[in-house]
Amino acid sequence: MKKTKKFSEYVAKLKGKPRLLIIFHSIIDVFKFNISIKDYYQFRFYNLKRIEKSNWAGSGFMYEFQLKMNPRKNRSVLENKIEFLNLYKEFIRRKYSTLDMIQSNIASLQEFIKNGSKKLVLKGSKGQVGAEVEVIQCSEYSPQSLVEYMKDSDFDMVEEYVVQHDELMKLSPSGLNTVRVFTQLNNGKVDFLGARLRVTVNSPVDNMAAGNIAAPIDMESGVVCGAGVFSDIMKDDVDIHPITEVSIKNFQIPFWKEVVQIVERAALFNQDNKSIGWDVAITNAGPELIEGNHNWCKTLWQLPVKKGLKSKLLAYQ
Image (tube, rainbow, N blue to C red; front, top):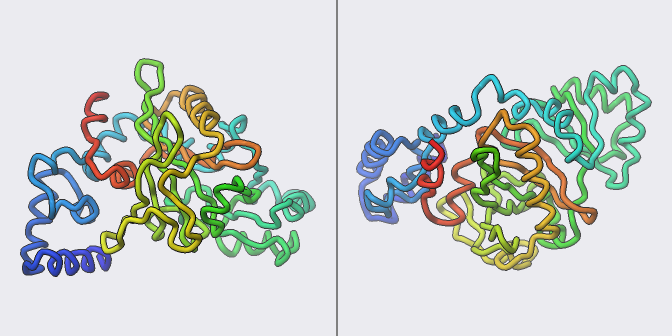
């Protein structure tokens, strides 16, 4: 609510109109175009004509589409990170363990604590959009104190910290910069709906909701083909990273061919869920899956390309 209040104040000032009128228009569009209030601002509906607004896939439409493509009875493997890692282990490079496993063998934590990155990632297995994730320094914990901290903080799994590719580290070293690839199963084949680079800005996680950047990737070449955008409408697009000053636009994603291959294989590996947003990390040794999302973000998908993409999904209904 605080964010939408700020957005409405910003748009009222930008358009030179009363804030109540902006709010009225946003409420009308919520019902007319099956969107949320936040969608109204992030999709810049206040600048669009009716025909343009109808092209955007909003929260209501996405809920219905994803429920059809990814039925609730099939979602557990994508909602529970432990289930995901166990099922998709052939696409995973990093070591991981559950709290239950390390409690039964605390000595096994030494392997994690002595890993080359000197960091660990603690997670809640059912956390979403970067919630219930914490990166810790190995030097600050003994095996026993780490177990106690995990129990006290409601973390039920631990992973090796993924050291990203050198080029991605140059782009932004504050956190893991992942590639989100959107896939749709279509008669036993994989259709790619697009890919986006998520870039951290002084953040240990790369979600747009945490104030980070997203940029479109050309599916053929793996080159970032547009400016980096924020979900905060009060921030301008950027071609260059605001801190490292490395170019985001025209950035070449390392191991792009391998990224596409691993995602295609994963999408075909288990076909219970048909429409998935895959998060891929890229190291100097190649790509690996971080997670798959049944409720993948329509903002991350559409905002970087600055147009509504609903028609792409309508073709599968």
